[in-house]
Length: 238
Image 1 (tube, rainbow, N blue to C red):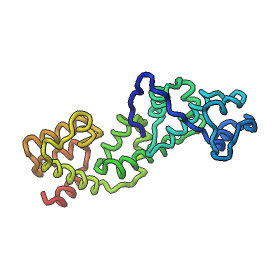
Image 2 (image 1 turned 180 degrees about the vertical axis):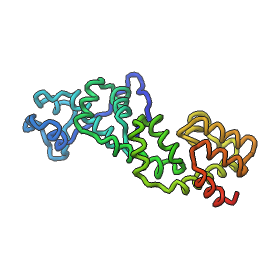
Image 3 (image 1 turned 90 degrees about the vertical axis):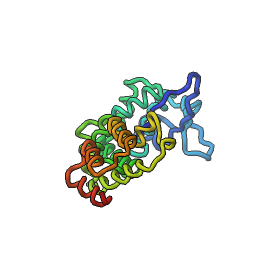
Image 4 (image 1 turned 30 degrees about the vertical axis):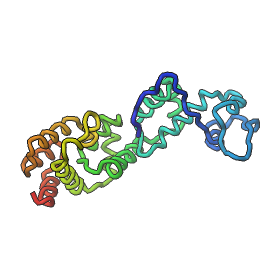
């Protein structure tokens, strides 16, 4: 899971360390006996020590290290998302990035499961099944097949998700204007999967139209089923 940004001009890349065990696993034919070890760390610096290894360049160290980081983030990472991170954020070449990712043989189906789980239970517990699939495809750039697999693997209680969504909408009703996030934060706060859902929610807030019918219409647009909507609205006493 990545939140992309742009490095400032002239900003130095953070010094990374590649663990000795990972380096030996990545490059089994290389001789690591010449690498200095002060006994304090099981890491190979990406600086001078790495240069001492034949054919083991700093660039190769960095792209492999960053690929491992990309695939080990909280949540999961799609192939396109990982490539964008390596090329746009870390500044590696496309071919080197693809080669590094291919080395790890990532299972992007399982990456989609981890990302779906992370989004549903740790960051924003109010997705419908459809909206979570859309979020994984559009925002996180998983394939449709990966997204469907990831969401279905959760076996989530979508009625409870609908109930959480209604609670979130009703919380908005009592939120003063000064506390409503604006811009991109508004989208993240109200509906991270679809700006149009955030806009329609804001319209409900502006007109104070938090009735059963209006909230039901909002849930319809967000992909909740008839059964899920009825359960959530009845539970909220609307």
